[in-house]
Amino acid sequence: MWRFIIPIGLFAALVTFLFVGLGRDKETLASPLIGKPAPQFELPRVDDPSQTISNREFAGRPYVVNIWGSWCFACRDEHAVLMQIARRGEVPLVGLNWKDELPLAQQWLQQLGNPYVATAFDPKGDVGIDYGAYGAPETYLVDAQGIIVYKYVSPVTIDVWEREFLPRIKQAGAKGE
Amino acid sequence: MRALLVMLAALLGMQLAFAIDTAPAFADPAQQARYERIIHQLRCLQCRSESIADSGVTLAADLRRQVREMMAAGKSDEEIYQHMVDRYGDYVLYKPPLAARTLLLWGGPILLLVGGAAVAVFVIARKSKLPDTDPADPGLGAS
Image (cartoon, rainbow over all chains, first blue to last red; front, side, top):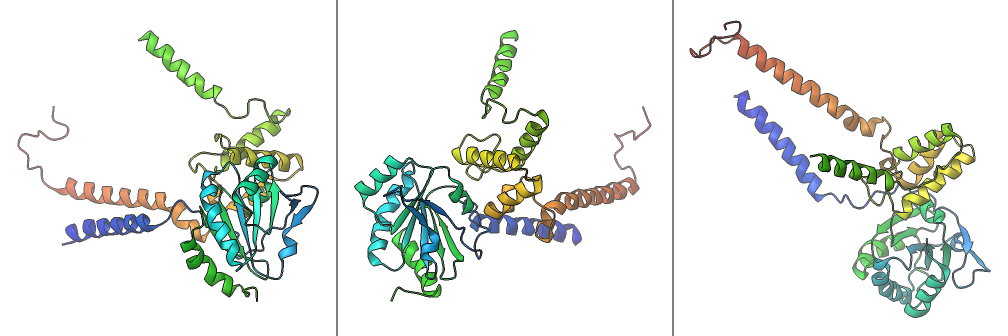
């Protein structure tokens, strides 16, 4: 009797493990920063590098940090969506231009439009690394208390925005009115 | 055959030629060895199955720079690893810490080894008690 039960049991356990593994998203790494305060930054502005932009300016209400670069192909697809989201005005979008060159970043915003209330210029990449970025685009939702409540890796779509971001923005305590 | 060996040697040499940072980062050999050890312990988040020592992507280059900067600032190994774990989680370490949540990861191989050995001992012990039924097999010791 055991002769059959043990191997079948082991096989069933293996199948369960593999099956659960199939459904798991192994591309997206869980960020240790969820539930932690958003890293502070103060960086030159892409539109005017003589001025700086700090995320302290957005404290007290939810905001979104979007990490992008002109070298990032997927960001180009995402950009049109960000333009739509910016027009809806649900939450301010703060750009973090990551590991880019200033003229290329400026040209990008001039040609494709600027969905950001401000874009910080991070050519060394240290601020992006503070946010635990490992690719672009990445999008973070920070709540009114300055806590990162959500992170999305890969281009945001309207569907993702409405499904993942909007409910959390409402929960994060403000709709802007 | 000789030509093949030469080609193989050339291929192996190419590996070295692909090393990422050509100049050593530190003049002090002890510091350089420490630097090499640390960057081999950190995973490249973009390529996943390479350490930042081996990866050519720019994120790995930035993380190597941060390691060099932290070493120059006198940070300990633990502080450097913690800096990376705070940003990227345990996944960034090739050797994750031994904790309750990683118990299965660390204990799994031992569990499998002990389990396999137990099964082997059980089967061998049982089989060796059985009478030798194969007339064609002279049995151990006969020659």
